[in-house]
Image (cartoon, rainbow, N blue to C red; front, side):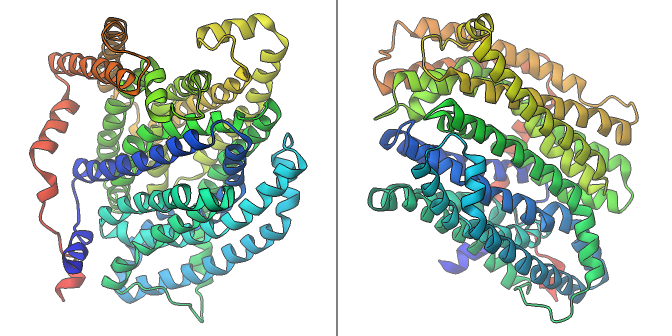
Length: 558
């Protein structure tokens, strides 16, 4: 049984659609577990101070993971590892040992320093919390400081799994992470409260790391401390990864500022923002992350070998698939937002007004799903080519823009009644307390869209040289998505008289059948327009990619 499991872990996937579908499937499974976690939290806690504390406590550990962990991220290491592999296997192992040793001491030292500084940092990022709530955030955050260490190691060693195209292991990691968090939600929270939730995060991070170990052992990359580090290669890695790390850290910093603003709005504001953010992250993880991760190793290979036409074509293929999937999801999330939130979160202490508020926030976030997915791909495209300065500048500008815009929108919402009335009426949340929180996802969506547009302009200028890019796919998907949204909305009204909307099954039935009918119409529209992406999806499913033969690396043949 164990041998069979290990054999499955070692399976390689070389086709981008096959790899992306595999990643997408497990991303969906991971997100389902995450939604189950959020449902339990919403049912048992609701939009309360406890849930606000739990989400606020993530901010500093997440910032450490992003600002330190991404210095040794997959996107930075794979190009170097590829070059070292061309030299010799021993050179590649020495390279990984040097990076591991350096990373170990840096992230442990930084986490230790932050542990003692946590009271001061918490006071800054949660200005609206009471002294008691601040002290609880401090304790929860200190427990969670173990997570960036474990996840950082896991992401470091995932370089090996991605290099050998062991995408199953990479895909299982977030699934196991959410399993650990669920253990905390279901078993530890009832006994230890919000501190039990924190320990669940640590269990999940440990699972995330442990799944990498069989691959490391198989390819003889088990980590070892280097007694003599090649600092020149470490500096080279840092110089390449630093711009992207700073860019991601800026985005994380903008979320820290948004969290601080949410604490000033009132109890439950952080929870509204995070619950809706988590919901919109489901399609982002399934589509944007899956295709960008699947495309990256091949993009590196093409650019390293100076195959620039193949590089652009491979990028174009991934971009078309992200657009093909993201636009229909955006329209469906906007039309079915209330049904989605009510089915997933609406029970126990999560009221109908809570549903309306989170649903409105979800609809705003949904507008940026395509932008977020494409940004992930653009970042990997620039990184594969070793061009990291432009993404850094773009992220700096847009992260600053998000924070400033959030302040402006909140001021306008609180001081201009006409603007407030218009927006509440547009989002159908008039009469609900705490609607000011909707200015936060609005600022984030506008800033993210700007980020996407700037990335697109510069990528085309640097690589595509004015050639036709993805216009046809965009227009076809946009037209089909509009029909999906329109048909789904009309059937919501029709099925309103059939399903009883006072029950879980009634809301689920109305949303499910409306969405399925809308999707069916969208598929017909795409078929009539001759969508290449639709045919590729059918071919990938029809090829039964899960039965693909295992590709054995040359090293294992020796």
